[in-house]
Length: 555
Image (cartoon, rainbow, N blue to C red; front, side, top):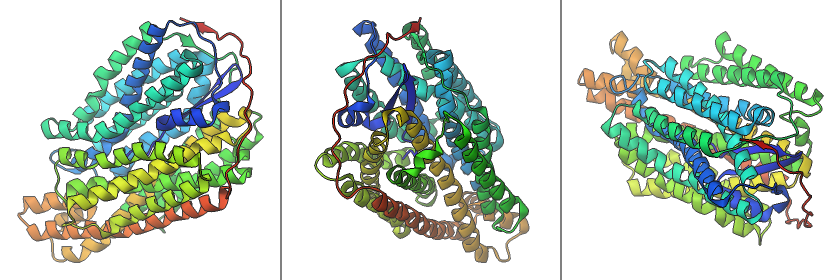
């Protein structure tokens, strides 16, 4: 499952608009004061064509978010892939999310200044070009660099995409458009692993990135022909200092955590120094944002208990989702030996559960306090992550599918309603800043989940495999220590089934230990949510709809 449920924010005539990924329709119905209307004069047929272009781009982003998890096992293979070690795979996954998280709020301000179509177009060009680069990367370093560029493109696309949707439609048509648009997320979540599995079974690993190029080209044509260059009369500051501090801080912190898994020693300078530097830079980022009158990331919002606790809980949940998804990719294909196609099909229950959970939770919170819905759901999600501690080499696939279905259902019941409630609880003028904070916290949780989860797995694997390497030749021992994938490759080359079995056993042990820690962290998120959400639901008075000035656009 993708660890990334996007939230876009933007301003229309000084009024902040917020849209919520796969539960946009639900949020629009339950929290109408966030969804103010802006007039438009576009013909209905053109509006529908614009919606089709936006859905195509959203599907592209969601597909890219989900195909990589199916590709990780292949990328780790020295023959079929790049022979990437766990640390490199952590960076290939986390670098995209890191760029996406730290550039999102800056991208929204760029859209206000230069026009959302201009920023959207630039993001698509960057995304398509970097996808081509990733497809033909000759080593893991090039792939990581290409994934960073893809994250930059996605960060430029997402806020502009939501802004164009909100400018194009008004009133009830907007709510309907959001509902239709949100289906692209579900399609991408379900189709991504299956598409990746099909491509990996029939083509080389780069095909999962190359497929983005023709889709992006088609979207670029539609964007140029159909979409006006909407822009806001109220321009937000770009905040370059905040952008640089947040990026450098998260990169340093993630580097130190991932490095710890590579060297298995926390006392080394190249481990603790980047971690300390990252924390200092992130603290400086908070101080800089506190001194700005209109910060892109407003730390003052954390003074509100519900907003702070809810965001911490969501961050910890996304931490667990990212880490357990990283484990699942290697478990299904590496330990169980499923083909990429079968592994992709095995992940469909997670997407189905998430798609069912979001609207189910929305109906429940109309009748029950949010705490009674979200806290048990987050607890169940954490327990399903801990459930990986009971999976083994001979676990029937049906039990894995049931676990993934329940996990997706529980996650869907938390993310949508909690996000909508956090933004709705803020004053309207703070909704945009609130969505920027919420999105950044969740994406940061995903980055750290990949870093910490992968590091735990690497450390525990090396400890578990070490006794089986006694007496093995030096090169064999060094390669087998890197990862279970490398150990299996060595075992195949030297016809040593005992080494392959030891690698599988060591991986399962590492996954069990990691799953336990991930479950504890996610359960802590449930405790935080329990303490921060009100025990009784609060009914808000309707907020009158203000008038808007005529929207300015240039075609």
